[in-house]
Length: 253
Image (cartoon, rainbow, N blue to C red):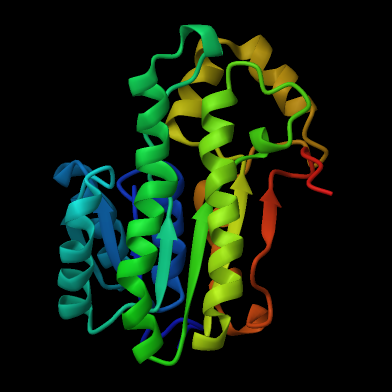
């Protein structure tokens, strides 16, 4: 029996990359996983990987930016999986670039798919977690929040900093309900990072050298397993924290 046996988890943006890695890791510890995203083909692929390993996963089409639809999605997940114990807000769709070239629409999109979407999921999951005696929320943020020069990452960092503050507030307000809320700030070899590294190997190697541990994290083994630890019983006293999963690159002190 895994540490998360009988638990039900929601992972947004789980069709690929970090979200997929987290979903795989949660399922490996016995959690039933609701795999959320915008492309059914990708969701089915993740679910297939989990089922091939003997786990349980169900796909749910969901555009997190459509926050009005979030409560119904959470209710459907709770009905099919028997409740909600774990929520991982991973999905994000925003823009990058210098501030002067950033449109208002692109800036808003980052906030809508980031803190606004997470807020909707957190509120919708709260009663289900409280009814089961507690739960755990993990929100994905970024080391760009503390980078000394966030040039071209400003809108992204702003949305994630808002999410970090939201997480800390939920930890303070919902702790008495047995609900913990933490953030992770990962570096992971996602499909987008892999494409960038292949397109610009020199800069990718320069980036890798800035990581004290010497490599970019694996989506499942480094990021997913850390999330398993965060939501599991061994770290039951940790809430309101931001955990840098970046091989020691960023300074969150």
